[in-house]
Image (cartoon, rainbow, N blue to C red; front, side):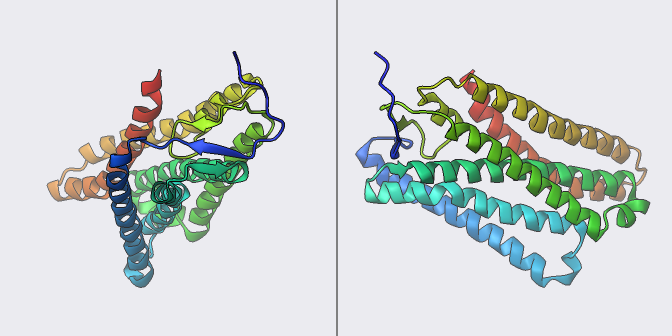
Amino acid sequence: MKPRNQTRVLEFILLGLSEETNLQPLLFGLFLSMYLVTFSGNLLIILTIITASHLHTPMYFFIFSLSCIDICFTSTTVPKMLLNIQTQNKVITYEDCITQLYFFIFFAALDHFLLTVMAYDRYVAICHPLHYTVIMNTKFCGLLVFGSLLLSALESLLHSLMVLRLSFCTELEISHYFCELNQVLKLACSDTFLNDLVMYFVAGLLGVIPLTGILYSYCKIVSSIFRISSADGKSKAFSTSGSHLSVISLFYGTFFGVYLIKF
């Protein structure tokens, strides 16, 4: 029998990665160390770019922004998970869950858009090197980051407002360590068809289009690199794009591995 509706949801229960008591210290230590490495590594990148004047270029401006986003992104979910493990309290309030949901989507989308911007930056640098400083000027770089912020805020606000319209059942256990959109929608007693429609439409519009832009940029980049006659020139071009390509592969590989495997 379907659980009855609840007039007002006060809290959810985050089941976490495992309910085995003997695994909790291991999980706590593992995720704490990973979080500290991520936080300190990105902080070191930020401080290096700020203090080194020769790194004040468009490429490093985007790397600086990406490091800030990565710190915020991990801080949205990991500290709460560590607190839950440490206190053995898996409860998260309704308000905190919606807030966490908003910022998780916001920083994930911002990460996605900024990687697209960085792909365009590398495309201009390698395919149009003589016009690079003219195209990627300070004002244009700022507009690209601002546009990414605006689109991310609108996307996360849309999903959050769509969740707020739902009523939830008495079964409020989230099979995750944070308030992930799909898991929250599964707990709703009201019809989630519109939520699913919006979620897939936005994912297609704001996900596929930027990804297509990234793939197009790297097709042009690879084509331009192969036309370079000198070995040193090819090596330099590959080195400037290789790190960004590895980050993109990790980001999308993780995304597709986590979400598409469910289907």
